[in-house]
Amino acid sequence: MKCHAGTLALAALLLALLALVALACGSAGFGWGTNGELLMLRLPRVLAALAAGLALGLGGANQQGVFRNPLADPGLTGVFGGALLGIALLLAGATEFTWNHRWALPTAAFAGALATSAVLVWLGRGRSTSKLLLTGLGLNAFTAAGTLLIAARFPEARDILINGAAGDWLGTATLELAWLPILGCVLAALLLLTQAAALDRLALGEDMAFCLGSDVAQTRRQGVLLTALAAAAAICLVGQVAFIGLLAPHLARALVGPRHRAMLPLAGLLGAGLLLLADTLGRSLWPQTPISAAAMTALLGAPAFVWIASRRHE
Amino acid sequence: MSEVLLASLRLSVDLAGRTVLDGVALTVSAGEVVAVVGANGAGKTTLLRACAGLLPEATGDLTLGGVDPRQTAPEKLARLRAYAPQHPTSAWDYTLAELGTLAASAAEFRHWQERFGLHELTARKLSELSGGERKVAHLSLTFSALGDAYGKVLLLDEPTTALDLCRAELVARAIRASAQAGAAVLVATHDLAWARTCERVLVLSEGRLVSAGPPSTALTAELVRATWGVA
Image 1 (tube, chains in turn green, red):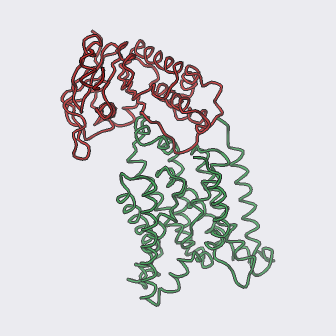
Image 2 (cartoon, each protein chain N blue to C red):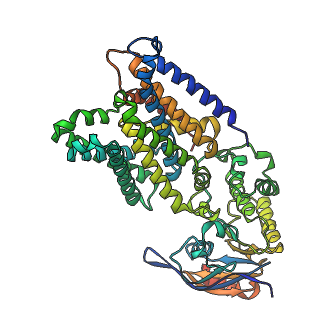
């Protein structure tokens, strides 16, 4: 068994460098400002991207582990869509309330994500994982339609929801708004790391995992709960963004192998790096017409994913 | 008379409204190898899974190492028995060395890996192994999960299917060694010749136990004809 501490340390170092560059990039030009005022302006956005990416990378890795399927991703299985629909329902019902209570949005997102996860597990029980993913795709389309419906019916929530569906909320991040979801992301990430041993055993199938001493139902329950928490916290920061949860675990597996003890933390670091890179490129390449983090992620992520998928041996 | 480690009475299992196992009574004692035989679909796999604690919906009496596996925490149960499924799978492409880290003891896994002739393949991924090699790799995990065999129950579902003669012999020896070390072993198999070398044989047909006892009395030519429809 090789030690992967070196790879993890290198990934962390590269991520720190990327964060420094991201702090220096922006429409006001390269640099941190004479008194660091640009730095302080960009800090919330960079922190938000890092935290959301971390949670997405780990959330995706966990969902893939729990469903034993490399194509699972909270962005594709409807968990994100559910979180956004939760936010939409809250905005439609109580706009005033939402903005006066900073925990209201994350809670609504968590409730939406959890409800979608529960429906996903319930509809997909006892079925093959490919059917589970198809169920997820259906849920994703349904929740997206629900969000758009609310956006159309409630003009005051319209812009914010359309931006959320496009994954374009990072630009609105302020420390005051973002600290709670950032904390949620970090908490979810740390808790997801504790699932490594159980996910390793689950890879061998539910029977074998049980016989090796795992409480499979508990692994599943915790996975669903923590992935929903990660997705909800991340969506409050970014809006809907696919591919991070899909791509980060893939890359991590290619670099350190499938064992979750090394793969999970690396997937988190890579997720953070990918989202920050996408956001930084999106707002720096064409400062006058910035591209949302989600669009940039898909532009970079989709071809990479197709490339990885074509190399898979099954 | 050595200690009974696995016992069932009126053990029945209904799956999707169909009775798959119907009132099976069995005992397996420390030091014993008991073979379960029967045609495809006779209920061999269901019997082993029920004994392993994998079917909480099973009805009837069931005792494994002094506890009811249906009501015992998985962690505690894992110290009392080891199980090998008929078709082991892995969602991810572990190397053999990585697979070994899933065992309770990596040293124990290496021991079985060597015993089954896999010691030179440690760096290989599961996808790079042949079907038989993969099967014994997973069996290494089961045997290493057993640890010290004394007083434990070993449940193996067709452990020698897909194995060449040499590896099948290695597995047969490992089964015998575990029993000699004090384990109670229950093995589902289609290998009637090997079943005749076991202490006792259980013959299942359509979920019912139709014959049980030493091979000479339980596995007669008439019974083979009646159960499998061949001479």
